[in-house]
Amino acid sequence: MRPTLLPRRRALLAVSLTALATTLLLPPPASAALDGPAAPAPAPAPVEEAAPYVAQAVCDPAAKPGTRALADALLDHYGTGSVGISRDCSAGGTSEHKEGRALDWMLDATAPAEAAVAQAFLDWLAAPGPDGERAWAARRLGVMYVIWNREIWSPSRGGWQPYTGPNPHTDHVHVSLSWAGALRLTSWWTGTTARVDQGPCTPDPGPAGTPACGPGQEQPAPGPGSAAQPQEQPDTPAASAEERALAELAGLREESLARLTTDGRWVAQLASKDVGIVDPLQTAQNGTHTFRAVDILAENRAALATVGDPAAVLTLHGTDFGRNARTVDGDPFWMTVVDVGAGGRADVEAWCAATYPQLTGDELANSCVPRRLTPSRG
Image 1 (cartoon, rainbow, N blue to C red):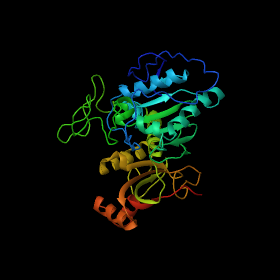
Image 2: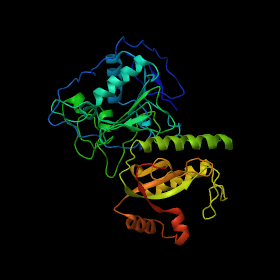
Image 3: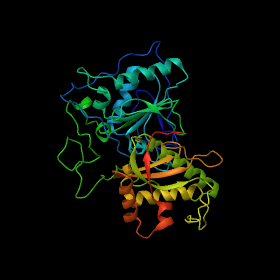
Image 4: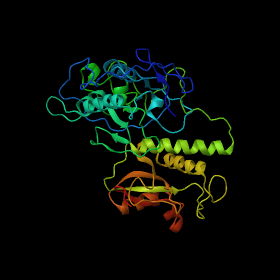
């Protein structure tokens, strides 16, 4: 689901996805700019490290000041497109849009002038700094990752990789920011190097405007008028529930692909299902052994509750890594894997046994098995 579109030079307000703002699409310039927006503050030495991936943890969709400022800078500098930031809490899947720290810059990859603008921005974002520092502007802005035209890039990994999510991002450039970038605390805005582990609050004295975390508090209270948790969905017919579950799984996969690293590391696979599959060793939430999309999503949520760390859980297709895991009909399996920090197969097996002591033998092997995150192959 696409976030609310916001017109050029207007205040970017956090609004419901269903309340679409009037959008003014300006004609693209005759030729795309080869440079990027000017930084309002001089660069410190050194600038920030590459921003690590930090997944959505709460739903506070109000557009954050750094996200708004970057949107304004893009529209002012390049003079084309429109920008959406906020995504309603009722939308399926996890997304930094729901924390106001992601933007969608609406550009058409099939329109040469707009595609040239996008390419100019992306080249500028990844370009080296004055002393050869990699991804200079991206690091100073706190960019976590970018998706555009079936490819994904992040300064922490470097290099563009194929993006196979359900939305090919051919009609917009997606940019997700770190919390420091979203809160306008990075050196691009302040001239002071920001912490790359900055959250929406800080356990230590931080820059002005950064809320302090209370004892044991990992997230701050969301802003006025925002939901602390995703809003409850109304009762809907079973078909709609299936469609909504598939949409949420697709959103979870999109976020997971943004941080997937196929470097051969060992992970624990907690689920591998296709819609309609029959598993005699497991019971779905519907009381049968036949798993629907809502049951696969429930397995994914159970894995997250078991692990507790959203950043450790990946929701993927069986074709996203390793040997392509498909059904006899050619459909990829939905897989939930957890990065448990294992050094090898034995470490994963020990983690599985400790995490699921109630399971043994075939039941344990059917619920938690070692896998390696290697590049996808046939």
